[in-house]
Length: 258
Image 1 (cartoon, rainbow, N blue to C red):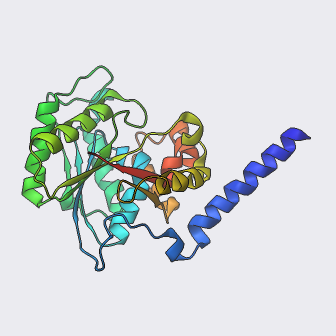
Image 2 (cartoon, helix red, strand yellow):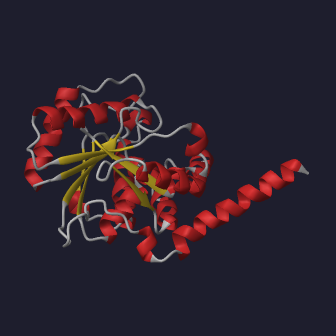
Image 3 (spheres, rainbow, N blue to C red):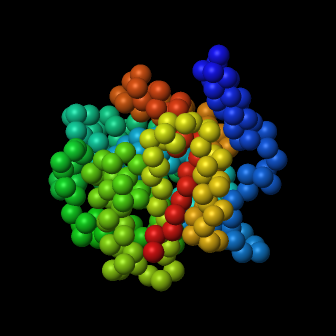
């Protein structure tokens, strides 16, 4: 009987969480991320990821937020994801996923550098990463960077190296008008709590001083599934479960990199 009460309670909160996303007035979903002034100012944002499918598995709420509010989004993927010899296929899949996300394909760049190859144990040079990021920032007039935090959500070494590459650029070379944000990693219980985590993420963001952390809800989670499905070489059963139950499908917490 006790277990039944727990299961029903979880189900009720799960449904309430989805209702918050789909049915809440837009004013309740409104975030001040990149919109803190009295008037809207379009920003040039560069999302930096390690592999094709990172954008759909982890950053969908951020992409949805930026594109729906008219910001100019660029995507830099630092490898083709060739760990299993499918780099060319995965590169094409990334472009198709970006089309679902409404990211302009000419604003998507996929690297295939010999020193930036996908795989556990593949150490990526932070100086090289910082140089590549600096080139993209200068080429497109980027004033906002978004990437992984130091743990990289899953702990993948390539994710973590991307973070340190961005951090090195910010600390060593970044113009003062460029700000950088990292996707906050969370514990495993929250990570697989699906939309339930929107409550904890909201609470966490309001506890920090203004302008340091923002909670972004995914107003169209279905698009995350459609985009991830374009990565057909990776769309196996356990990734389908991941996208269904991962909180990163429904909410992103961005923290400012200092």
